Image (cartoon, rainbow, N blue to C red):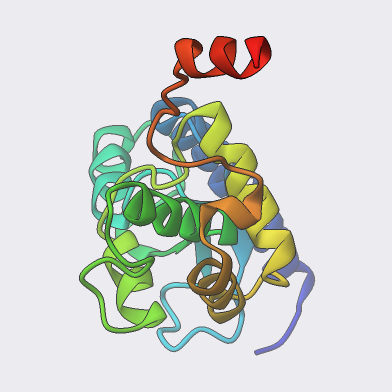
Length: 183
């Protein structure tokens, strides 16, 4: 493909339209959405990619996009690529949730890849309590940002290794401690 002045101007104009559309998707979905040019696409009609992290599934994002179709002139929703990335923090949250529920870190999944595939079908896998989000950030650091590293750490150390106490509330017998003081 040549890069004639007409073609460059056309790409710049399309880029502005797609960026505007991505902004509208950000507002509609509640997560940051970006757009990028993909000249090495498998399908030459799908050269623009809409990309986001965690948040809605691809199916939900396409549904939101269908509602917005026609709101920005020059954007053909059918000719966009869709790229959702699941972050290590979201993966760590899933591991932590499984352990909290009394299951192995992978839950019912046989591998990290299967758990990741399951997260692809869940809207907003990055949501959790503030405590769980902090534990997830620790797990990501301790697992070197690798799924298998996080899994190995939790299997070896459990939530206690992340600084989380026992999952069951500690029952303090005040009578026993007062008896010990009197002896």
